[in-house]
Amino acid sequence: MENNRLRRIEWVDLKLPSLKDFDRFFGWAVGRVCFSVWLFGLNTVRISCKVVIAVVDQTEKGTYRLLEIYEQLPHMGITEAKYIDASVVEVGEVTPITDIITAIEGKQLMIIGEMGTGKSTIAQYLAYTVGGRVKVYECEGTPDDWAGLEVIGKGEDWESINQGMLADLEDLSSQMQLRNEKGEAALSGTEKVIICEEYPELVSKVEASGEWLERHARRGRKARRFTVLLSQYDRVAAWGIEGKADLADAFYRLRLGKKAVAHAKSLKRDDLIEWLKLDRSHCLLDDEPCKLPAYREMKSVTQRLLMPPVDQKSVTPETTAQQAFQLQDSPPNQDLEALKKAVKACAEAGLSDSKIIKDILGCSGNRYQSGKQLLEQLRE
Image (cartoon, rainbow, N blue to C red; front, side, top):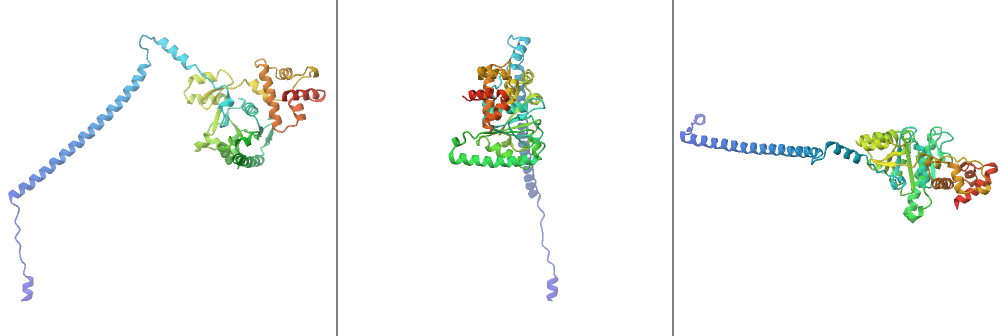
């Protein structure tokens, strides 16, 4: 009996929705579709408005650009020929930097130019003019190059250059320590100029070159250490400072010859291009035009002064300077100043009076006393 009772199946009656209930469901579904269509329409209108606004903005910008071009066209009674002539006059006006010593204050210097542009002469001229002891890193120089200066690395002696740069780093640390302890005035008279010929070649061959460049770029000027780097290459990667914008900003770039013209072309400055081609002394300091002193004037500061025999009684600084330089395009006062700076720089470099008289003033043998008297008068 119990088993039969468990097996009995009971049926439950389910009523189908009436037509009235189905109509209400259908009405709800239609309302939901209407809301969806309405929202879709609103989004479509919003997107369409954004597209229209974007098109209007671009059209407005394009109109302003066309207006800039339109304003440059002949108008208000000005003929085309007169307008073009006025433009040419304006572009041709170049105001160069003439005092390069003042212009490069506070930063180090790169001199970039192909062979024969006078990089070495300019570097020596700047070194003598800035003042202080002069040290040169040169791996390919001849015995006549950098006469009278301390030269390290001739004959591709990379190890000597490496040791010299390590010594420079110690010297820089000492200078900064002295500055921190006793102040800026304590560095007076300790100035030094370091010239590095073809620095990019040292990047891969001298281990200390990277740290040497970085520390002198950051602190060199504060420590009274002025570095002048020479190269034929104008690429950042060649200098080993790629990706180091702060180091690149610590240097002025003095571009000469074709390097300057190429840089002016990259700036799209036709006026600079034409101006650079006018004279050998025209160059670029970063992006600005710069006019260097006459090449003969700079050369007169750096070359050995071969002087003809003179009467000891008639020796004066003025007459000797004029005989030594014999420059037709430079005033005697400039020659005299160049001679004074050359003698002063050699003395600061540690050369003895005897060496200055014989090698710099060119007074040896029976003219030694004349040279000695001249040296005393120049010092006065």
